[in-house]
Image (cartoon, rainbow, N blue to C red; front, side):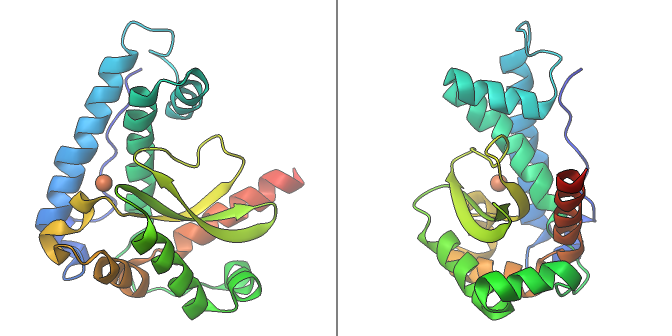
Length: 203
Ligand SMILES: [Fe+2]
C-alpha cells in the first residue's frame, strides 16, 4: 500500500497570523506531498513497497540509505508536526505539566531550551521534545532524520527548515519558534503521546 499524504487537521488559514495560509499551503501541499511522492518512488518494486512508514525509516537507517531515510523521515516528521499545532490556545496540564516542571524547572524554562535548540540547530532539521529514559529532553535531528526507531518517545516537534518560516519570518527563525511556542503548541496532542508511552511501558 502506498504511503499517503494525511490531510491537515485544520484549515490552512486557522493558524494565522502566526503561520500564514500561504506558508501552510505550500508546506503541506508542495513540500510534504513531494516527500510522500518521492518515498513511494524509492520503495516501488523493492521489499519495502508494502511496508509501513516506520519500518521504511528504520530499515533505511540500518542500511545507510540516506536518500530514503531523509525522504521517508520527512513524511513522518511533517505528519507529526501538523498535529503538534492547533488554533486552540492551550497550556500543558496534568502529568505533562508536572514533568515539564520537574525536568526543566517550568514552562518558560522549557520554552527557552526548545528555542535555543531550534535556533542553534545548524542548517535544516527539526527540534524535538522527547521522553528518554523516563525524563523529558530537548533534542534535534538533521535534515529528514526523525526520532523513529531511536528508543525515545517524541512528544512535540517544530520544523526549523527555512521552508517552514521564510515566507512569514524571513531569516528570523527565533521569531517563528516564539510564535510556535507561545501560540500554536497542541499540548493535548503532546499529552496523548506521553499517555500512550506510559500505557505501553506498564503493559
Ligand atoms: Fe517542512
